[in-house]
Amino acid sequence: MTGIAGVNGDLQTQFNLDKNTFSSIASICGVDADHKLITLKSENKTISAKGKSFDMNILEDDSIENSEISFYKSHFGFVDKEDSNVKIADEKVVFSSAESDTITVIGKTDDE
Image 1: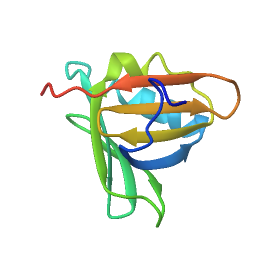
Image 2 (image 1 turned 180 degrees about the vertical axis):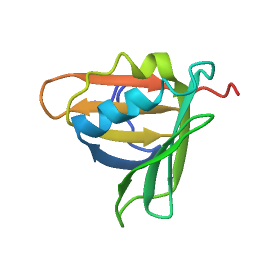
Image 3 (image 1 turned 90 degrees about the horizontal axis):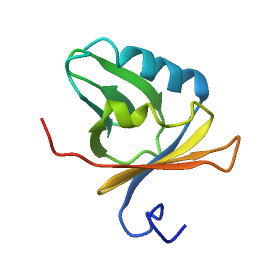
């Protein structure tokens, strides 16, 4: 875990994401099909998934630190829709499945 999936020094926040919420996020991404990015943002103890025309609260937790990362929705489609631990770091988001040995890393994008 110290290689490409490691987030030791640059970890901003982490949280657990269940597969039902995962599926909801994937479904709502189709709302603005012309917009290519999704943003995971944690602010005021709330994690949200944001696109051009949606802002979906997905989790509230007192231990969540403020963070934000944008990445391509098409890359989110490669993540197995399983119960997962999500780690947001400076330049990437890491999805570690709780159901299998799968770890998926998606890099940050600065495109608008």
